[in-house]
Length: 212
Image 1: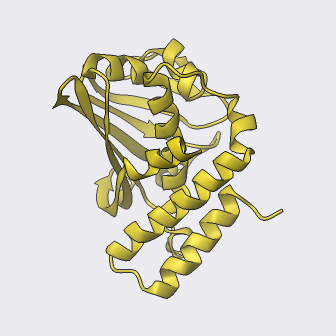
Image 2 (image 1 turned 30 degrees about the vertical axis):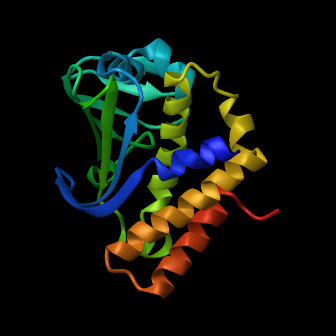
């Protein structure tokens, strides 16, 4: 358990603002270093067979202008693909999304020296104020923390447990709880009050690791 909790401290988290076609949005930003060559990391996040091994099954026309669909999750359009440094996609849930439902995810890679890679993910969305006030950045951030954990395990050559089984395990519940707390600290750094942070952490933790 200590190993996957160490993964939490490997990530730098921020929240801020960014503009997408849907309007002025909120951002969650995750940065970390992977001990793998940039070409390996790029392949892991763009090759469908490898994506299936650490994330979830993906289908579609995986090229710029094409579309993708993650099984039981988001889909969208591939906006930019510049190997091995930049991948940008729309990220949409639901069958009949409105313009406000279309969010964007951008991943940037850079050589980190000594065969490592610097990884940055920015997810920008127009978030209803009511939802942001209730959950803060953790609503999206905890899910990305879990995904980056899977990528880290994959790059180390470790097998990934069944996603549904893992996410219901005590280890994943503890990971999600601490991730929620970490996103609470990023919310605090953005200027939120202690009361806002506490409420957001409680709501996010209850969503990802509900009480028995």
